[in-house]
Amino acid sequence: MASTRFTLIAGLGNPGETYSRTRHNIGFLVVQAMADHAETEFSKTRFDATFTRTTLSGQDVFLVKPLSYMNRSGLPLQKFSAYFNISVNDIIVVHDDMDLPFGLLKIVQGRGSGGHNGIKSIVDALGSKDFIRVRVGVGHPGTATRVTGHVLGAFTPEEQDGLDQVVKDAVAACRLILSRGVVQAMNQVNSRR
Image 1 (cartoon, rainbow, N blue to C red):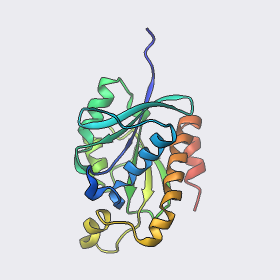
Image 2: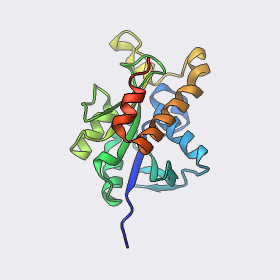
Image 3: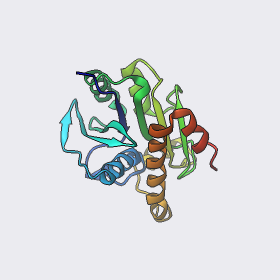
């Protein structure tokens, strides 16, 4: 039996209704939109993550939401990728990023965590930073003391108005990585202002 090559697309967030529409959960919103579009549901749970398997842009894909809270996202993804033999280069992580203005997207690979605890946890657990990241801008509150409230806070009415488009753009970025490869996807997405 030929082994299937999988891509793992993980959206980062915090489990539970309390956090569902917060900035920190934009990764969850993106993978949920991908699942909705593929008419599949997050019906399976394993390794402290909920997941579904589908085909996107002709690729075999696992869509995954770690259920371990943001700053412990790494272990579920490490266990999942080890079990299904997924290479670190075939892991795409979608997450909120305060260093980017709301709605701006950047695709990066092999970069440090930039102070993002979820990413730091994944780098530590995988022992590598070679996975692909789709950074989704949520803006910065201006001061360090307001960071927690900002990422765990709800979107403003203005942001809420633009949120569907931001999620669509992030889904398109993931699909571009699958269909064209990370370098072409970076060239296309990262040049947008």
